[in-house]
Length: 533
Ligand SMILES: [Zn+2]
Image (cartoon, rainbow, N blue to C red; front, top):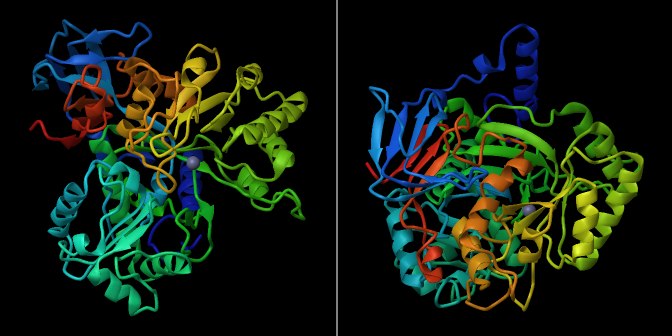
């Protein structure tokens, strides 16, 4: 299949089809997927506070990784000769964070020199970060931040103005999940030359906003810039401790679109596939397929039925692997029925109590015909969620993903973390970030622990969790949601994914939790981020 964006090499279907053909001709998948990522040096970490998140919640001081997997985890590891030794000097270590539902693929396809800004909390810090970025960006080229950033994260509770952004000697374009869109004088001139109206303070609103993003996409996106954005995004979140992303899709747009959540869902994975071919993936990617067929479509399920016939669920290797259908299944109950019949996983998201109640009812209808138990179906970002619905989902063997909180407002907006921690239903952590909210896990953890959004307003009432519980949700608990038992905990035999933190996230004051980042991130024994040296 020719790629719509003109990229050279495999499209998604060729990639999967090629793998299948090779498997039939007697080649193993291992040889097809042999990548430089696999050639990693063995290493041992000593003198750490290593929170294993194993079933006994052990905290140990040493961990040995050989050939990409943990081979010893204890206080008394006998260290083989020739292994690289890293002295942690008492630092805190956690398993690699699994974000079990986000939109990293959208973030990896942003136009311009995309620059995530989820680690800065004041306007001056933001300007400093953009100035630092400008040293890597050729004169006249756009620095962009599109999606996972918000006015609420800044002490000033607003985005930078045109005048403030003029301190950066490049065109700058910031389009926030919440809080509007801003550009500077260089950006304003570029956009106005293309008929996009920008206010004197750099704000872009209404139809001009769609036109602005469309113009940036039309003129700045190439296969190479997409690949650069994909790599930058994965690296950025590896610095924040995420080693596995489960991507939950985009709204399909065949042509380039001005919508923040829109992409071509048949080609948007290409930049990530390109990184995989180069052997430069700095984190793992799990891919779900979002479908939105109308229940009234005739013939029924025009896109979903083709997907279920022609794609492979849970196929790939340790770096990139497909999953199920979501975060929209499309097609109403008929769509759910088709997914269940095919034996795939299905996921939908909920925005309110009425919505989640309907989702549970529809699943009960299908479950009465085709038992869903064992397929690990998911409902994500449940808001209000009474125990009755938790009971009914649990009976069907389903799980709920929790998170999506730092930008929300109001009292007791949910989810009811405390109730769910005491409930037998499967639960895990997700940010849902990329277009409507942030991805930085520490912003989410901070909210779940303190109950406060990024503006400091109490939104969770008495439903907060302990740090141990939050970290467990984002690591070991997420094994169930990605259906991989050898990730999410530091245990012998598991893949060597871990994060050495810059602070003790179990002890720092609530206010400091959101500034947590990684000093050393290891994925399958490969060091993907290193400030320890
Ligand atoms: Zn989502």
